[in-house]
Length: 125
Image (cartoon, rainbow, N blue to C red; front, side, top):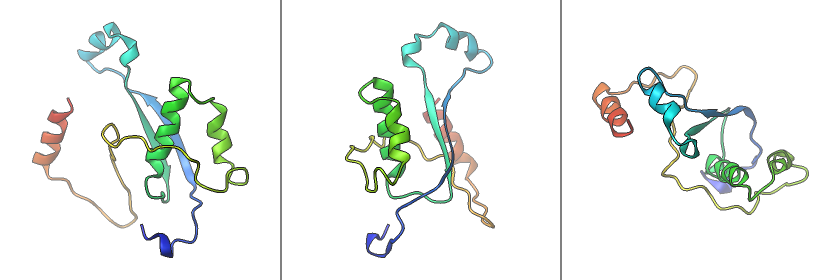
């Protein structure tokens, strides 16, 4: 991102969800037996554009809310650009648990190599 040529730092998030990953098929019984302190969730954000590392900062705040070190109300407060006109002073979430799953562009069709998809799936499954 070229900060010198960026004039608008306001981005619209169309939707945002925190979704619990559920077990499937034979794994469902194992999932139900698991220690739920190790539950897995994913963040699903949709927007027309994002700022450099915006999702990592958002994830960091959500992690802090989940750990109880920030109140739930901080999320709504930080969305008020009149109240917080600048980037809040939070550390970024580490990149290793965050995976960019998809980007959609009008009139553009990305194709994935099946072998690469297979290797990626097996790495994380």
